[in-house]
Image (cartoon, rainbow, N blue to C red; front, top):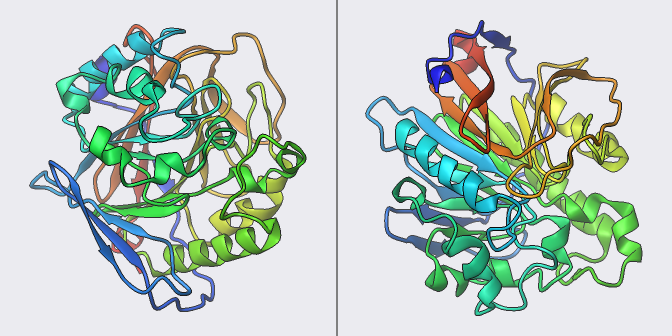
Length: 351
């Protein structure tokens, strides 16, 4: 656990450039509490991205987060071992919440909120005291081949109050950092030829993506947080098994670069990976090692691969207003790679 001190040389994050935005007047807010979340619903018409208000609990406003993806396999493929080490790291870091990068339940999501797969793959696995915090999740492609709306149903929080998927895309406002959880599965064109996918509330594709990108641009432009972190299931740039994603590179990446996003965190590739963009300060981070790994499956990417581990594990993130300290852990809890990012004073002050 030596890397908890993270004496890495900081990289300086540049100030964001803001683009024009279209004002959206109505929104959905969820306030995250220690025991449960309370929904405050405004007008649903022409809504911007729904929001969870997760107030920092530490006196200095700092945050500690774990990120894991591609995990829900009833404890198999070392899911239970990864969960145990997440509990150890979560206690040492005093985490505020957990981010899931999708493919939450294999192989085809859940049928409904009473599906036993949910407890068998989530509630009965992540039992450590430190992990009894809110989990903010995006859906992956495997979640879409079941009942894609079941994980969004508020009734699922009656089964386990931690599980927070208030919409397919939403924002977690947490003081010094805003997390933009984005639904990337509809971007992937070849999925639309597969009849297993549940496209309710998504089709037509082009309209759904256009509205999502407009809402994301508005959210990024109006964010006053020091750190802007976007979470999606699919990688943009990757040297792991799935490799680069053409649709996200063409459609999503320019939005992230134009609006000064600091990190894009994804799953889908069953590995741990840090990639630095060649033409922007953006960090592209894969945390998809929650259970089954793809040892030995590699691709090429034009971006700079700083670290790649083709095994199981998870990522930690410690954020202050001026610094970010990140680390990858393996299934035994060993720190594989750690690094730091630094904000300039002007950037940390926000727009």
